[in-house]
Amino acid sequence: MDKIINKFKEDIENVEIPIDELDAIIQKEIFRDVRRGRRSKQFLYSIATAIIFFVLLLGSGYVSPTMADVLSKIPFINSVLPFTDAGLEAADEKGLVKSIGQTVDQNGISMTVTDVYYDHSRLEIGYSIPFKEKDPETMKQYKTLGIAKADIKVDSQEVGYSILSTLENDYITGTITIEDNDLPKSKDKVNLFIDVTEVLNKKGHWKFQLTASKAEQNTVIHLEKTVTTKDYTFTIESIKLTPSSTKMDYTFSVPSNNDDFNEQALEFNIITDTGEAVDTIKKDMIFIENIDNRKQFKSKVLFEPIQNVGSLTITPIIKNPEGEDEILEDLELEMRIHE
Image (cartoon, rainbow, N blue to C red; front, side, top):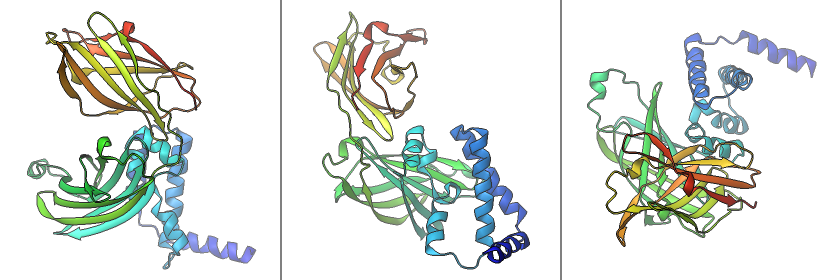
């Protein structure tokens, strides 16, 4: 055994590492760790892991299936979702984000579906596209940086979706979010068909087929709680707890003649019974109705996931006519959480 270990050490020491490539890997990992706000000890561990695996990969002409599986899970190789928001990061730390790694090449563009996550509140798909263009003038020619159009089906049914993308180093990375209203309510596994028909100004068919399994965790649902003041009515219709989010469905209404109200600026403070703030991940589309001389706004908000919490205190925040935040303490609601 000692001879094997010594031989392994000698092989590692004799591997010539291309410094430029190694530096690029480290810089990319630094960039992502800054985004995630990791502590320095964890950050150094990530870099050390990156270097070790890079050396092993270069020093071996053969990668076993087990090693290939390990390499596929290293963040800077093919993972997107855990770097998207705190909720997906938390789900990934529990092993709930599934690696996919399907790549389609067409019209000179290589697109990879990297990973997928599915729970009672969200269905998210990560993707990446190599992209080395840096010239600002050339960049202006692209009407959308990443996926511009796609046809997506869940269990053979067309669904609505939204796409967010960003440019990191030499990759466009992004997420495809399936609209919540189109998610099956009772299925634990769904089949996804994605046909990207336009990307980076080029038309084609980048087709992907994959399955997504719902994360196993009880969902806590609290139904309808309302508070009303002279000018406002705030209703929490449900709160769902999943490994990736705390999802709130709400209704907020104002008098029809209140033209100063900006529904897009409506925010919420959420504080746990331990005094911790729960940050917003993202807001959904707002639907507006006129009912009985009032304007009613219905939407959903995803907040960070919570654990071991007894209750949540939720307070709406609006913008006053001067554009300043106004906390509506009279509309504060407390929701008991039973896990």
